[in-house]
Length: 221
Image (cartoon, rainbow, N blue to C red; front, side):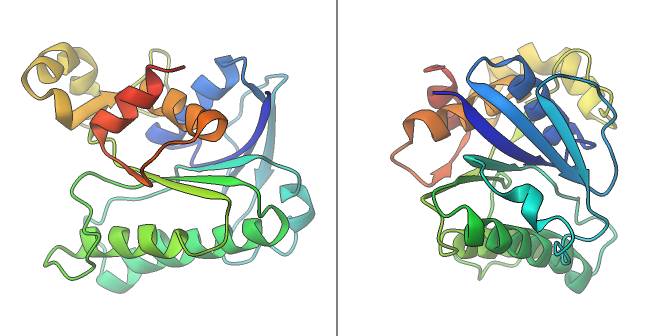
């Protein structure tokens, strides 16, 4: 089975890592990268679609039809943002994008990159964790055939990535040590990409995937 994938967040570290795996993986036939700006790569599998605002998809809705999966990797740190600003980006934009896709692709598998320690109860003291938890819970009710929320923890970037910033540059070199000391707290971006692809092809018994689940699913690819 060859799958066609919509991917968001290609200009960020996580989305770029997942994109590179999709382009290399023979199970992926086509990738439509949707974002506010182009990633800027020429590849026979890749098409790009620029959308200035994920709250207004009316101009590109026709381009989003006929896909098997969405790998939603767009996101932002809560650092320096108000509750309302973070919620708009992390919840409102995500849910609007998902609802538009579900309207024309109800048989799609939707894979959402969440975060370690996300608060599924939506009642905790940490703002970003509550918002991520609410986003996970709301996505599960949108109406897709399958929805998976991935909580990858710290991630090792893929060699050749352009969009690696901050302490993740250090993680690239320290990953073997971090993995040895904290194996349940991180994975490679390649493993995340493989796990997403395998979730579309094979499914998984849990909707929320922690690091160990990601590694199990990636190991089947």
